[in-house]
Image (cartoon, rainbow, N blue to C red; front, side, top):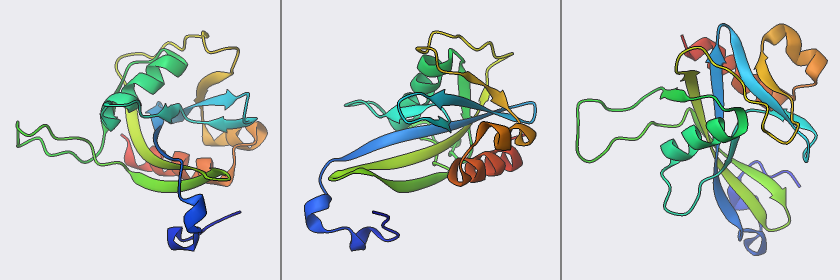
Length: 157
């Protein structure tokens, strides 16, 4: 089932929508990716936003949990206002069909490591690392992830 317009999703399938984050971390012309064993594909760090958690905090937490890398988000955020707290505007927002009655509203962020990143291999044996465009074909990175990687490399300096 591939819905290009959310209004095409039957009402019975609109339950089970979860907010998630995906973080494309750029370092020295490469993007942080890990092989998700359960899904069998290469993805950026990411996951569900926990109850009462801010999206920005979820993005930072997911990168640290999955790779052990501390990052700072980059992109649009108003810095001229102290209150109310200003959050980063996601680089993208997409609706992903996961399974019958289960959707992810995925907030896409770009980030840079704080200092020199050191990948921690405490992620259940998943392969995690910084990979450049010349490596994506051999890894089998899908078109959607590749597109976000390319955009992150263009937009993050």
